[in-house]
Image 1 (tube, one colour):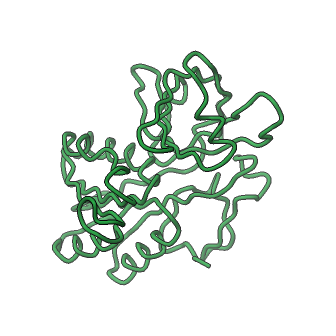
Image 2 (tube, rainbow, N blue to C red):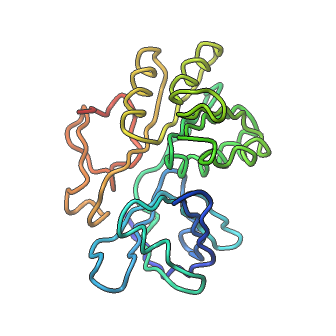
Length: 261
């Protein structure tokens, strides 16, 4: 695996919802070669605190402008420091890293299931699918409330069918986004393919639904990482093929392979 290291210039770093930020970076090499489902490993500070890099799914790319976007939520010291970055500052970036989504041939419908900040890599995937296929993309957005429903209008403008579920019922279906998945599958008799990213409980339920119905499904897993290159074994997950490294064997895995503990 060829590892690309670049100094990424911050173009913008805007809060798009409470504690959720959209970071745009100028990264010429990464913008050209990134694939949906891959990630960047960012060094947040040139100092030793925080010591380790932080992994972030690649959210969108604009190769013609040499830009890569990261959508992230402030949850700890690393992301808090990242949220303070301003235009013209720089970040040491490794990537794109990892194995992304595989686009199968012959799928009748692509169903993308996003839970919370898990929407980040699925936007990149949705754009790629719609550019290649033009239609057949269903995007199911799960959020805590209407204030955290992101990209609904953009996805519809791009040609996707969008359905929303919120925990409090402030927009769309009241309940988990997996309810929408079951309803969608009940109405569709074609040859669907599921892609999902979100909290572990959601991914476990998506996997259960997919396996029960015999539907191919790919999961983008989130895991704490240290090296990001497969050497330290700090991000392993249990699969039917043994323990696998999320940073190099994933972060995307077939749902049928993942063992939830």
